[in-house]
Amino acid sequence: MCMQAIPLKASNDTRCEPAAYTDGGHELSIRNQPLKELLIDVLHKGAAFRFKAKGFSMSPFIKDKDVITVVPIPSYKPRLGDVVVFISPDTEKLVIHRLVGKRDNSHVLIKGDNLPDHEHLVAERRILGRVKRVERDGRAVALGLGPERALIALLSRRSILSPLLLAMRRIIRSILGRFSR
Amino acid sequence: MGVKAELGATYLPSEDIVVREIEGELIIVPIVSGIGDMEDELFTLNETGRAIWEKLDGRKTLGDIIGDLSSEYEASPGEIERDVIGLAEELLKRKMLVALRKD
Image 1 (tube, rainbow over the protein chains, first blue to last red):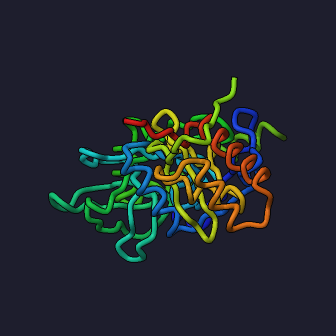
Image 2: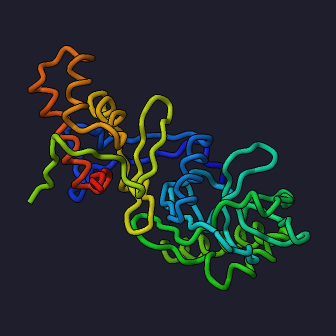
C-alpha cells in the first residue's frame, strides 16, 4: 500500500464548519513525500494519525480508501503480524505493509498481504508507527489486526495467503451465486 | 459564548497542532484527543488568514500585527482589524492559538 495520492477532506462538518479564514470543505490530495513529513511531525508529538490510505497491496485487510489510524512507537518492539508504516529503503516512500518475520536485532521482514513477491528487509528504525485501527464505510474493521495477525503473517511469508484468499473468494462467490439463482 | 481576542495581547500557535506547507498551501492539523485527524480535522488558511497567521509569532500584539498589515496591504485599518480579530478568535475557539502569559 504505497500512499502516492491520498484524498483528504478538509473540515466541513457541523462540528467544525469552514470559517471565513480557512479554505474548508474541499478534497485535498497530498502526495507521498509531504504526507510522510506530516506523519512524522504528528507521531513525534506522541499523537496518533488518522487518514485515508490508498492502494491494494494490503487487501482484503486494508482496502483502497479505508481510513487508518497509525499510532507512534516510542518504546515499541515490532511484533509478528503487526501492520506497520515504514519508509521504504528502496524508494524512500511511505509504505504500509505487514511485519512477517525478524532477521536480527535491528532488521525485520515486511510484506504486503496481497503481494505475491518476496518480503523486504527493513531496518527497525525505518518503522514510523503501527496501524491500530481500520475503518471502512464508517465502521471499524478488526480482522487482520488482532491475535490472528501472527497467522496471517506466517501464511503471507510462505506465499500461501494470496492463493488461500483467492480460493476463499471463489468459494464464497460460488455459494452466493447458488443462492441468487 | 465566544472567545475574545484582545488587541493588546500576544498570541502564538498552540503546541497541539502540526503545521506544514504543502505545495503552496499551509496545512494545519490540530491534535485533538491525542489524534491528528486528517480525515475530519484539517485546515488550510486562505490568503488573508495566512498573512495574519505568519505574524502570530508570540512577539507582536494583535495591535502591532494590524499596524504591520496596514502598511503592507491597501485595505482600510478597520477592515484589517476585523480580519485579525476574527481569525484570532476563530483559532482561539479551536484551541489552535494560545495567549502568551504576561509574567
